[in-house]
Amino acid sequence: MISKSMEGLVKNSSVIRAMFEEGKRLASIYGEENVYDFSLGNPSVAPPAGVKEALLKVLNGEDDKLIHGYMNNSGYEDVRERIAESINKLFGTSFSQDNIVMTVGAAGGLNVILKSLIDPGDEVVVFAPFFGEYRNYISNFDGKLVVISPDIASFQPNLAELEERLSPKTKAVIVNTPNNPTGVIYSEDTIKKLADILNRKQKEYASSIYLISDEPYRELAYDQAEVPYLTKYYDNTIVGYSFSKSLSLPGERIGYLVIPDEADASEEIKAAANVANRILGFVNAPSLIQRALMHCLDSGVDVEAYNRNRLLLYNSLISYGYSCIKPQGAFYLFIKSLEPDDTAFCNAAKRHNILIVPGTSFGCPGFARIAYCVDYDMITRSLPGFKKLAEEYGLKQ
Ligand code: PLP
Image (cartoon, rainbow, N blue to C red; front, side, top):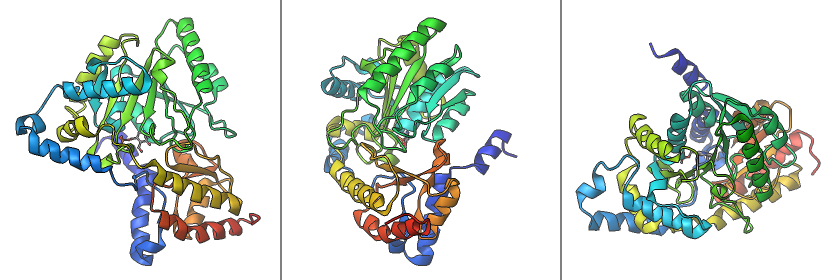
């Protein structure tokens, strides 16, 4: 028998992954070119050439003990120093290797920091719509998920509700900008107001409220949009970064946490994160790709390829009558469902071989997410299906 908690989790296992499987099934019936799978955030752009060159450089140049060995649970010191320097150059911060913990992607980093911070019953606040896995990560440590309802006009975080829902039990607030699933970037004004609320509430409760900034999409910003670096606005910020999207390396499982000296109990959190990385079973982030980062950290992803997809899909859907906020970053569109039941709407899309994910998975019913990290040609082929779907619901053309 498996545990009761896992029984529940298996039953409710990710809708997104189920869609991905459904895509494979439909492709076997209709042919791959006639199925339009927009369900998963798997980057369609190849890793920059610099990544392969870096891997070869490592394999040809360094000794096996260094490349493939165990290390400090927080990661190689020189890699962490190189990352700190890169962040400092970009954002005018002053981090050192001591502030960096290498992690198994953003998912590993979030689990490490939640394990480090959360006692059972502590509250962790998220803003709807949010990456559905946060539910599981928080429940892994018996934290209590507190969901702030969405501001569907702007999809900026609903700060008025946040202010009401913070409590002496609030241990952390998670933000994700550029955002999955909306593509919205939280503005500097929003961040300043958020920091102001958190500072006031910390004082009122004589507590520490950590702002966890989940940033896998930091570099995916369009039209020169600025993505504020949150440690500069709020001392108790902890950044979780990932190379899954910025270098198109989701399978390599590599990212890092930034734990600033300014954060309350910074030394204790760094020590806790180091141990959490080990005892959660990660031990350390994968060694080979860590070493490669020494040589390819600044290789940029081809943002223009995603931008082309964004503009084609956004402009087409708007012309068919769909409603959607124009995404400024990441690679998702969050369209309004054409009927109140977003699952029924996604099933209707499936009848046109279009796979999209109900907003309910992101704590935001009445919407659906389209991941446009796909081939441009696939988007082109899918457009007649989106048009027919709109016509079925009586949208004006
Ligand atoms: N956070 C958000 C908002 C994501 O969208 C994802 C992946 O899609 C992750 C975290 C996990 O990323 P990683 O592959 O780095 O674990």
